[in-house]
Length: 69
Image (cartoon, rainbow, N blue to C red; front, side, top):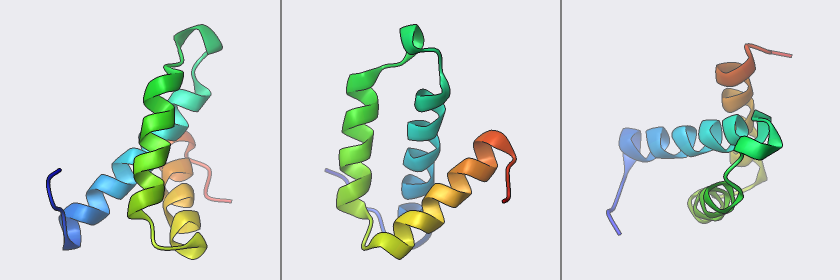
């Protein structure tokens, strides 16, 4: 597996969070459950704790829905 650090790692985490949310919002017939599951597992391995997870979840929500609340 490639090693990411600093800004590259941040971008990988943010991209995964956005992708997971985007898949979740698709109609069920278009969702790729296996991709989403694998992305969630990878994100869980990269994220260091609940606070960081919430930060990336919020960033994904803003990117996908525009909702800042």
